[in-house]
Structures are given as structure tokens and as C-alpha cells.
Image (cartoon, rainbow, N blue to C red; front, top):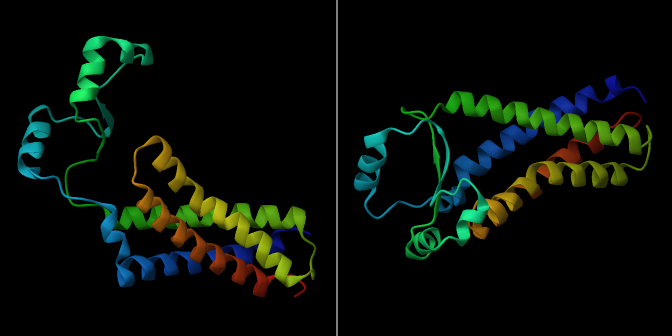
Length: 186
């Protein structure tokens, strides 16, 4: 099957997921629990602002080489704490328009890969429930697995990942339904 026959479901799924995510994040508000306020935010901001770190991801305590973690001084710093991973972004209000465009591009990438997988595993006019299963499962992997790695490696609370996986399940359902109803030969 030519991939051109899948551009319509790819584009519709992209926009549908983007809209569904807007509804989930603006109407339901359950992601407010993803972030917490520091006890003395002003003091932390003043301490960070003093040296003005460039945007990036920082760890505390920092070890250039994992073997340093065995050194007594470093081990003591880990024990004393705090142990943190800090993401610093550019100063200024959040660039919401830029973030929404990047999210739209990511949705397009996931939908494109879903279409690619579907093209090579499903037949035109095939079982539509199977189309929904395959495309939904592929979309769930694309939208959901990053949350798990954030909890494993970046210390994000597992509750954040569970909320993200719930979102991914909705996006997978939306994607699967779009591909099911717009599948060539349906």
C-alpha cells in the first residue's frame, strides 16, 4: 500500500491528539500535581541567580566520573543532601506558542511512525478492529514510554508517570479510532 494513502489519517490523528491534549491539560487540571513549590523559592532563586547557570540539566552533587561516588567526601554530600536534578531554562515567561508548535511536531512524528508501522503490518480494507489495535498500541508506545524513563533515570515521581500514561492511553485511543475510521478500503 502506498504511504500516500495514509497521509489523511496521519494528519487527522496529529490534530486530534493535539486537541485532546489541550482539553486534558486545560479542562481537567490533574497535571497541576506534577510540579511542587520549593519551601523557600526566593532563597533558591537568589542562590541560582547569583552565578546565572546557562540553560541545561544540572545534578547535585555533581560527579564528573561515576567512580567519584565512592570517595568519602562525595558520599557524605549524597548522604547530607539535597540530591537533585535541576533543569534551567531561559529567563522570561514560558514560550507557550513555541512549546505548542513543538508538541504538534511531536504528534506529527508519532502519527507518521504509527502510519509507517500500519503500512507494513496491515492490509487495505483489513479488519478495522485490528487496525485500531495496532495503531493504538504503536501510538501508546510513542506517547507513553518517555514518562517511564523520566521516573527511572530523572527522578520524576511515579505519580507523574502514571498521569502521563493515562494521557498516552487517551492519545492512543484517539489515534486508533482515527486510523480505524480513515483506513484505506474501509
